[in-house]
Length: 399
Image (tube, rainbow, N blue to C red; front, side):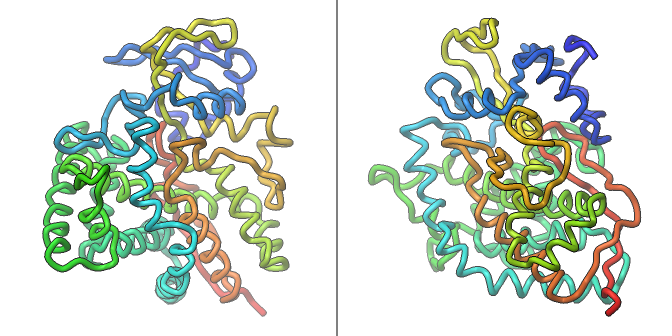
């Protein structure tokens, strides 16, 4: 396949799960690849592990201020940029506001709550047998937990899920086009502004209370900063874990020996989860913009050009991983880029890891098996590695 034939704006390979073939061709033939863009200026793609890591590590040369998705759809309210769209030194203090609230020690305190939610979901699943793993489990666990972190009542969580789906992609199952995302965004802003108003009068320990009281350089966060923060945390907090769980179960269905491995070595479940993160890569890509002319692979990237980092490709790079197209549950070391890299690495990575580890621990401790009844229906997106539907049967393993 010639690299000129590769169009990463064609979403069909991502929906069918065959995009790996395209990335393999690009890594081999065109590690810096120009891609035309409908209704846009086009972009450069970096697909090798070291190149992706290099771009992610240099915010002075590759900035986020012009957007982090291939097509600019900044998640902003009234003017201010979200934590995704500011570079150092502005980024650090802004990120720290939420990072402090979801630091590892705080996340570990959530473990009993997470286990309770998992057990409730598995109780329902056992009683039903056949179910859609995405709708009934993978979407529900992070939804409930991110709702608790933000302070959203449980009865409002279905709205968070709908808004997340509508803003995460333009998949026709969820969206009628850009106007769907714009409407959902406005609804998110309205919802959290109402919740924030309550928390200013009666603050609690949730993240909305923290953000409402937060200051930057002695000044309360602006309306725009607050709006963008709520939106980013809601979408990222839901999508990452949902995609990791559903993609992980699909991967284990094709590699069932690692179910046996986890049952025999429960202390190694966290290692298997890391391979799930590499294998799935919940966020396929992120974009930067070159701040000056720079040469890469004997090709000149001009100042102002879009540069897209394909994490999904980097995590299958033969130069970085032995047998990258094989799911190796005890792979170690496993320096994947499944949660991004650098300043803008995933804020909720520790929570996603904990939720996934506890889920598989509880499945195994309860003596359950998860069988796929049909192939996954994948999200039509080159941004999130999503699964829309995953028909499964959850059953007790025969003694």
